[in-house]
Amino acid sequence: MIEITEKDFSLDEMIKRARSKDAGAIVTFLGTVRDDDGIERMEVEAFLEAAQAELEAIEEEARSRFSLRAVEVVHRTGSLAVGESIVAIVCSAGHREAAFSGCRYIIEELKKRAPLWKKEIGDKGERWVGRT
Amino acid sequence: MIEITEKDFSLDEMIKRARSKDAGAIVTFLGTVRDDDGIERMEVEAFLEAAQAELEAIEEEARSRFSLRAVEVVHRTGSLAVGESIVAIVCSAGHREAAFSGCRYIIEELKKRAPLWKKEIGDKGERWVGRT
Amino acid sequence: MLVKVLAFAGFREILGKERELSLNESVTVKELLAELAVATPRFKEAAFDESGALRDYVLLMINRKLIDSRQDLSRPLQEGDELAIFPPLAGG
Amino acid sequence: MLVKVLAFAGFREILGKERELSLNESVTVKELLAELAVATPRFKEAAFDESGALRDYVLLMINRKLIDSRQDLSRPLQEGDELAIFPPLAGG
Picture: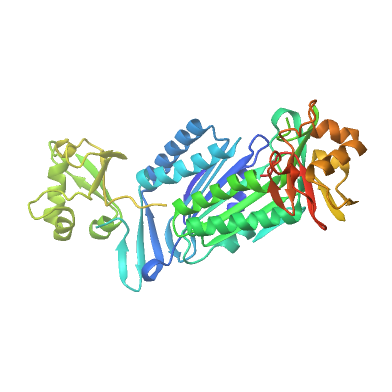
């Protein structure tokens, strides 16, 4: 399941959905707001329909390249404080090599291709990430 | 925290312990019993003191090689049914590269170096894994 | 001809999230961006350099597909097209 | 001299998990394994090949440190040593 949402999510529920009798390995990536350089919170913005479609395309690529059994992706939007979850990706596969590779593939492609933006807000002001 | 235990564990609790304000990435590996080839359950056995010491050594290596912020490892022993959790490894780091590498390092070294054994039990009888 | 313009992140802060524009038949992406620049000086500053060229970090999608911001600017917009304007992606 | 022998996995099923052996001063790892083989034919079968050599998959630890099952068999055991016998590791 792919979801872009303002709400926090339960990793436990995502992992539960990814479990299956033919999956021996489940790899999870959780991205959280880091307190770099005086950052207090982040605003996450999405081009919702385009991001959803792009994440679904990435999921399909990962499933077929790595023979994944299950893929769960949640990306949050809105205002997130330091320490809060931004994104979670759960991949299950028969063996660990595929589960690691699939999870890594999805986060790398998400960062490159999904229309999502983060604004860092802290004691030095505000700044859109990636904007030079 | 390193733990070898008969009890099931809460990944959610492990991830909660691994969260921190300076960690932007948390990678989790969960190994579960797969129903390969008629397997119904697994018996996991440990040389408890030696496995605990080896896992602590592996944790230390991973922490210093990849600058990990937190490491959590639980390995279960005893009788585990298909689908149940065998092992969980949680690594947090500033950035995802380190968290992925650290988690991968720990599972690979655990498999090579920790004195733990699995016996597969299924419709074709019993078999110690790795014993030719 | 109606065209929808979406803007995100820093460009949303300048242009607003969404607007519908009524245009002449023959307008290209470049011409539409120039119109926005005339109407909104802060957009001109953010999106174009001193020589009037689109800045490297301006990304464009037409109908949810990225276009090449250097080569495809002469593409004529069609009735109902959706043009999205945004800075480099930074999810995850 | 007392030496503790631990066995795991398939070898535990044959030898039991733990036993304390009273030995002569000079006994080597090889001699101790030979004694176990005499006392327990199933261990002999599982651990040694037809030529009497230790099988490749037999792993040994002395005091929780792996030893080289080919080169260190002549090592003399000391009072209080703990010898562990097990098949290839298979955790995770």
